[in-house]
Image (cartoon, rainbow, N blue to C red; front, side):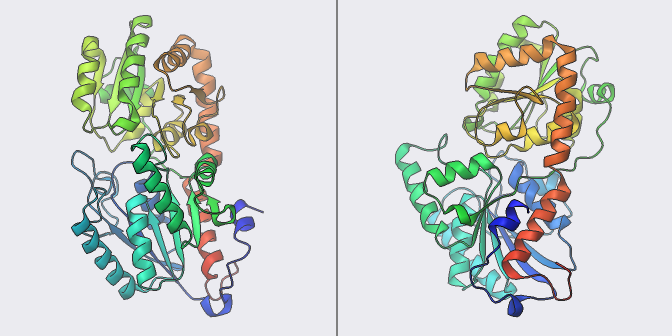
Length: 403
């Protein structure tokens, strides 16, 4: 019995005979489709759920200034309804306008399930669902805001809000076991409300190592360390910069590839200025498989994470990783098997990166472990199957199905 089947054995008194239908209508709400795990999961479900069984509608807000739009870069074919005011930044006037739009969309679409993703969309989407009397509400925690984002005062307010909304949510989805445990420890939701549904990826076939390096303008004999992230405070690009300088001292042939943009890009350029042409700033690229195919190791240096997409993508290509011990990152990077999990310290990150670069045999063993772990746990097919099972357990299988 899977975790979803175990946790969803009861659907809270809903009449399954009355709710069984030929299609299940799902209205999905997300604050912004910036590059990252939430956008990947949303587009994967938009593409992958069986169209004969599920009718979907996607409502999105604007990406923030300096962020790349996932829909434009990687999924231009996915249809989405733009909701003004739904973007990440708080704005009382815009929030009220977005709430009104969401309520109208729910009433027009009449979804069987309203599924929200990301914090602000979770508040506005679930509020609109309650106002429109939509009975089945699901919210996915792709991470959380419990630390690394706000002051203690604001964090306490966030926790109170999430606790209140959890009481009016049918199911809470966490992308990793540790994410779920941290939310429960904060008093958000009850254990029986949660299901764990990790992300799933299906990248294009990557180029060979030599081809990838040629595409990125890297020497074939270089030792390549990659950093793929939004350049914001919580990602701790400054910690990566400190680690990179230490690695550069030990490995004169090492180069550093940074894929991503954000408000801290100028600061990071300054911090790595002394390394000169050994640092390659790529901006956002749609072909992330090329970056991981070219790299010997990828680093994640965050203070807070959910289930990091960059680590899953890297593993699926066979790129070992060094990550800080945050959120569910250790569920992606198995310490000593597919990479290394270290403390939130630049020297610890540097030591682990040096260890991978020093030992080609170790690097190859970690690469094999990464591919195997990703294949078994983070496939696109598994994400789609888990989500379909969740929806059918909540609403009932389509008429005539064998579920």
